[in-house]
Image (cartoon, rainbow, N blue to C red; front, side):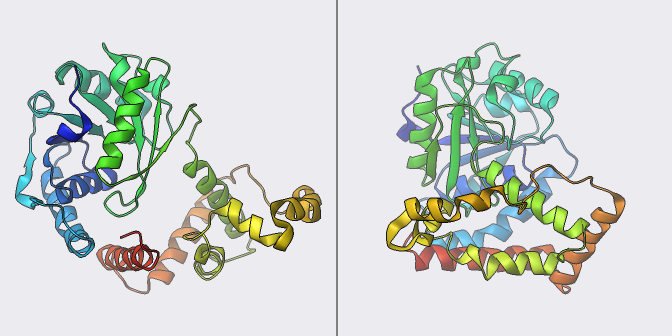
Length: 312
């Protein structure tokens, strides 16, 4: 018998990199006790640095009652960590064999009925739950970077996931303050990542062919369609592009352009030259700002957008 989503008090975060650490910061800010586990050397120090860096933004957004960084425990033993869980969020690197083994270990150590969620950015749960003794409680809870600021979580189960687990996880994330898409079918890369990937691949093609610089690509989004997307997504944006005739007029008028060679969805070869061009372009655009500087800048901007739209 699993606890009610509203009864969750202790969240275990297995894996504390950029995504897992972001989850730790978020759950702490929402007033949960968090037990973190990560086998990497120096993981606890990096995690606490990440949480401290995120805390000003989370404080500005508003902390839940009882939220405190002192409620974080770093536990080096996975079994001892999972034994305390009311909910588990796994955020290990994107390595299928690793995730299979880790989810099986988490499943073996976690009390019966407790839901185990994965932050995977692309693997179907069907492929990851194969070694679990009780795969019915495993589900994908795919967040967006940084999880402590970006509201969306995509929830989807695998072939062996119990239907009530998908519903439970969706309810839990909503209670925790997230915006949730509950997917009815597994899709590689889920929804948002597939859309991001299409844009990313086209950007790499343009850099590789010399058609655009890194700076031009970023400006084309931040000062172009990116300004519309916090208000209306791509479908509603094109609905408005049809004027009073809406999407119907837009499709009838611009539909033939879908056959024009405007995009190349296959990925370009990641040559050394392309890699170096992208890295050097990002360094130029950063203009000496450190990663911590850029994180703080991003967080201030996201908060401003959320507040301007009445979502924070």
